[in-house]
Length: 283
Image 1 (cartoon, rainbow, N blue to C red):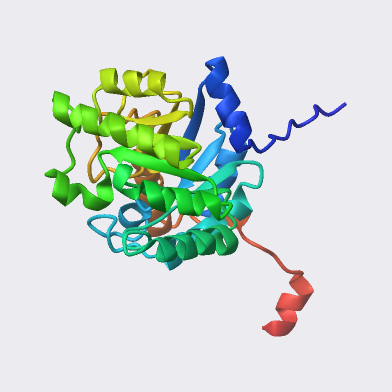
Image 2: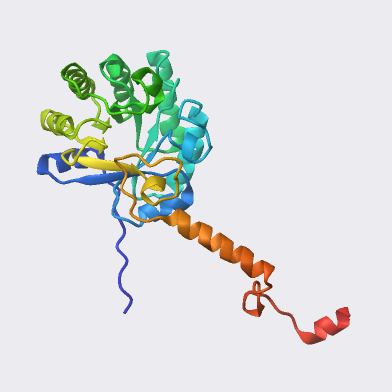
């Protein structure tokens, strides 16, 4: 008798909050296409972020700023099709929420409605609390994002750890509290000292999602291309590479190329055939 395949059940916002209460960890990875999302859907990972990091990973930009709402929607559609049993979050790219509250709600609605995602994520602290509140009031779950915010990294002095001194750490803590007060269901903490990650996680009733924020956050996220060793332009300190697929892929490509040059591929095993009498008539 064939073994029954267990189908993963999509998580909900209340369930993530309940996991925080119970001290249960959960995970998120970024993914940008159908094939990768379908693999995540077969795993134990509960969340996928269609992140604006697709600008670098998928589109070859130097940063995330050029990414558009249409880019996010395009990739979100593919991810949602590939991962119907996984909670999917769509990133709000630079310029989609910082001009006005009306723009923010309109663009969040587009990402939710056209992209088919379950929630959106946006960068920024207490200054953007009114934006978060308006989007939440529009019926769209929001994940906040503070600490290192890649969209505005140039204003922060580059891609470096945030909140190392008392003043900066206090500001990030205040940002976290403001995001919770605005109605966000979770907040991502990026590149902050692990002690600050622990303090914020203790102070908030909503889950913290850590990326370079230490082991005490309620959940953790990594870019899937980083953890699989597929993107090696740079490897941040907080990334653990669970496998180095880029080396294996290059090796396979070179073996394919060698096989073709040496006339080992394709062989008859990988070719189709036809009846001899048909061939004779053709000749």
